[in-house]
Structures are given as structure tokens and as C-alpha cells.
Length: 196
Image (tube, rainbow, N blue to C red; front, side, top):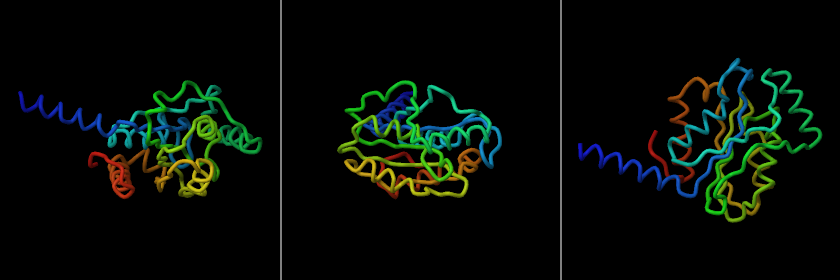
């Protein structure tokens, strides 16, 4: 029994050490998604939770004040209009303990070649000076598109590490492959984590 308690305490301490100063901010879309059908939890949300499980980082989901339509074509219309208008949709809540946060993971789906505008709302609201930013995204063939470069340009006071692009269908349907991909990526960019 003492060994089990000691092991539990050690895992708790490891999780706390990994999580210290780390935040995962993400936007994800449930409902109808391209190539995966109708889903209850978005692809990017699943990827974000895998990163959290491996790093112990806190999660902050960008939940739009005005929800996007769950139907794919309707969501496409709204997202296209936002891109054309350079809109900055509002989200609920705020990231906690921002000043103490030194590493920020930023996750998003690729929406027709771009970062969803709601993610720009977040990135433009906070001061990223001196922070390490780690992008990640889900897609169905676009990879990162140009989002790595866009984040590097926008957050030029931060250190932006190489992001990870994972297909939404993998994140949604293949937990083992997702954990392996995320673990390998975290090792490559030098982020402490438990092994997947």
C-alpha cells in the first residue's frame, strides 16, 4: 500500500512539474466535420487533450459567444464571411494566470487554408513577449498551410516552436497513432512530457 501511495505521489509531482507554466489554448468544432462525419467532440479538442495528458498543461477552450453552425456547409459560410471581413469573434472566459505562463500551445483546425478568426481574437488580446508558443492543428490534407508563418509573424515577440499538423480523422479515430505522433513531436521540439 505504501508503494502505491508513493507511486501516486510521484506521478502527481511529475504532472505538476510538467504543467508548471504551461497552457493549451484551443478552438475546436464539433458537429459535422469534413471527412469524419458528425462528431460529439472536435478533432482539435481530442488532440489538445492528448497534449494535456502527456504534458500536464492546463486546457483553455476558445468557446465562441455565438456558436458556429454544426452543419459543415453552414459553418463554411460563416467562417468564409469572417475571413473576408477580417472579423474577430468573441469567446467566453479568459486564460487564467497568464503572467505565470511561459509556454502556450495554440491549437486550431485548418479552416479553408487559414486559422479560424476566433484564434486571432485570442492571439491579439494577450502579450506574448518572452513566451514560448507551440502551434498544433488538425486538417484533412492542408498540413499546416501557412499558419506556422502567420503565427511567427503575428507573435514576433515570442519564440515560436515548430508546430504539429495531424489529420482530423487520425485525431478523431486513432488514439494510439495520435499519442505516438504527439509524443514524438514533443520530444523533437524539446518539451518535457511523459512517454506515450
